[in-house]
Length: 135
Image 1 (spheres, helix red, strand yellow):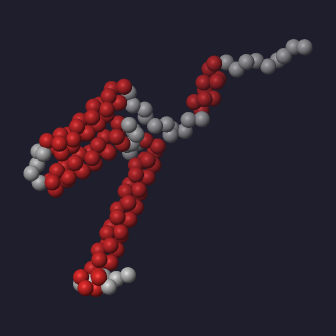
Image 2 (cartoon, one colour; image 1 turned 90 degrees about the vertical axis):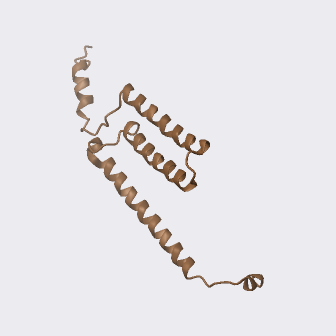
Image 3 (cartoon, rainbow, N blue to C red; image 1 turned 60 degrees about the horizontal axis):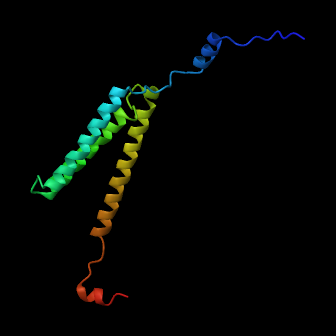
């Protein structure tokens, strides 16, 4: 018995593999970009630690705002260097999903704060005598 089937050549196998790529591959970072992201992350972690432990600012509020601002910067660094988020990746859908998520989180936080403020403002005032009679 003779077999007329031939093993597929390397060239046709590679064309088949690449033929299924529809341009949705995310750009992977190089060693250099990962190291830049890592160094920035370490710096953005060390600075808030130094601000809190060293008591750099007299105001705790200023320290808190600085730590939060550096935290936001660190989130951006992680999204760019480790998650490879940019307007070109996945045809812009990752950035659109991020924006949609941020809008939903903003609406949820704003609504929650609004409801809590109005609940607090509209609660019945209680005197210490009234509180003693509570069950």
